[in-house]
Length: 184
Ligand SMILES: [Zn+2]
Image (tube, rainbow, N blue to C red; front, side, top):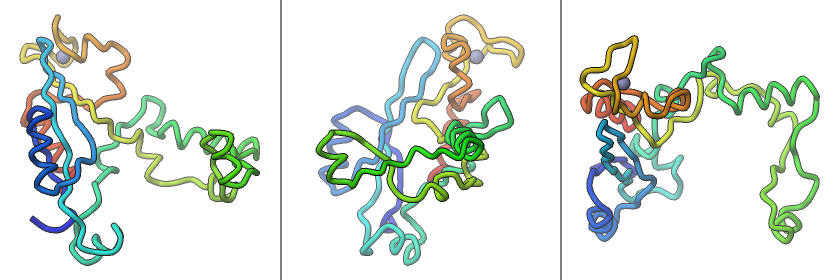
């Protein structure tokens, strides 16, 4: 495998530990929710980098990042993510949530605060207009679901309105295609 390449392993925590022992770093977990309910646990791994930084690794080996944008979840109201909506509100009020405290001061107070320039915070980011950041929970419909209505036991139906925040698939092949896009 190429340095910095991502891959997903499905299995148990013990499976994940074996891959960790081989030197791969675990970047995230993935839960695939099937009808039943049944949950398949996945682990997102990355092979070690062979450059000083992630950016350098991407330039040298073409690997290290994830394809976030094609996997974003459009929101109902035009697609923009909550982050994009916060920035738009901030532009309208000309009021950005930027702390005037120095980093050491914030740490002492136990606060996570945003520093930097208000203009940078307020600027529109094209990626965020595509929708929400892809979540690590994926939903698979029951085989008997119709496009108009989900059947009893379908995880999409069980989540109700909240299902809008997650990618939804007809079958596991759909999940694999989505993961391939994310990792490509
Ligand atoms: Zn369904």
